[in-house]
Amino acid sequence: MSAGKIITAAFSDETIRELKAGDSVFINGTIYTGRDAAHKRMFEACLNNEKPPFEFSGSAIYYAGPSPAPPGRVIGSIGPTTSSRMDKYSPLLISRSLKVMIGKGKRGPEVIEAIKKYGGLYLSATGGAAALLSRCVKAAKIIAYEDLGTEAVRELQVFMFPAIVAIDANGNVFPSFC
Amino acid sequence: MREIPSDKITELVEKLCIDANINLRGDIARSFEGAYNREKTDTAKSIIGQLIENAKIAREEKIPVCQDTGMAVIFAEIGQDVHITGGDLAAAINEGVRRGYRNGYLRKSVVADPIERINTADNTPAVIYFSIVPGNEVKITAAPKGFGSENKSAVKMLIPSDGIEGVKKFVTDTVRLAGSDACPPLIVGVGVGGTMDYAALLAKQALKREIESRNENPFWAETELELLRDINSLNIGPAGFGGETTALKVNIETYPTHIAALPVAVNIGCHATRHSQGVL
Image (cartoon, rainbow over all chains, first blue to last red; front, side, top):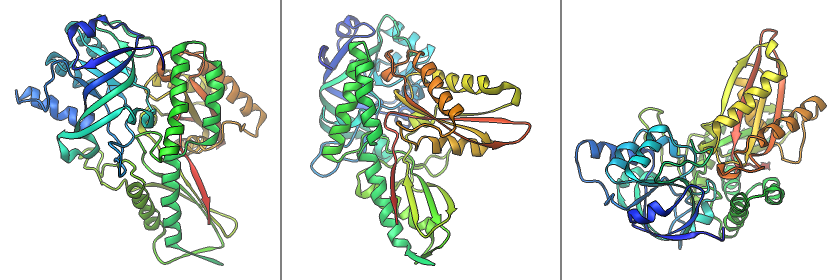
């Protein structure tokens, strides 16, 4: 991917709102991983008014569980997993400011509605391009739910991480993503 | 009677699990070039370009093509003149999976109970299909299966009057429902006939067949091409951003069935459909 706007996490509302469905971006900065099991816990933490594992406001959650890092590497392969499995949890998390999501595939109507209501963003990374995406990760550490192994929440420092806007803050959806 | 020690099988399974996950199948890698040339938009071209680059990085840096290194599906074809010595064959295969996933830095993605969901931490057990074949060799195929695509697979018991049009509709409907979720461009494995479970196995076996191959029966070979055309007119495209290449290939395998039935199974394979084969 050549053309594309560089955006830096944590994201301002202005950055989010400037992006339109179909735009290509490169992400720099800090993002967080979380998939099925971590979402269940974050969702329950929100319901119980417990502190989330990281500051949600302006953050992006990347639906990913990496393969183990071989010696000398920061992380193993790390492509996106199917986003729709997080649909049950996302509307509540979006309402609590975790409104930038990176994954692959479709989102349900409740998620699209929440993105529109709270001015969120859903980015598609290329599923299966996991070796390529691992090169964009410059540092990684587990910050929560370590017992979940690959499903633990990791803080990643990324550089020129490629993605495409699938749903923008106005709720415009790229076809095939709903 | 030829004797093969079970630890040789463990060693082979370890090697195949690693090889399958790191080295993208040659036929799929070749098909990316054609897909790149066929695509018309910058977005579709850039995604296929990422997949070409991804396969190269994985091969050079010896890391998995996809982080979902799958549940290990193992096809073990055992020659009837072979005697396995030194222990339980299934245990030897599972030990190979255990070592491959540990030593190859592959992700452990198996949970012990579907509801309790505690990770087994070594990617075992594998799903193993044994078959007894003529000869004195053992042929093992490791087919690690990612579940982004597996989750979009389906089986349906059609009735005879549904005919070939019913089969085609079910296949295209299944791909349409999979949409952008299953990592298109896809390899679509189709099983037609047998029983409910056997159709599903045929669909999984169909994914093994190379992209350049065709069904030996001219009718089914033509159906493979027709279905590929129908699927590629859905405009799902690479990663779901529209385009010419929703699937790279449709492979169909068939078997006789009952007078009352027309079972059809669709096993969706992603663009990182993985296989590695070895013979002892």
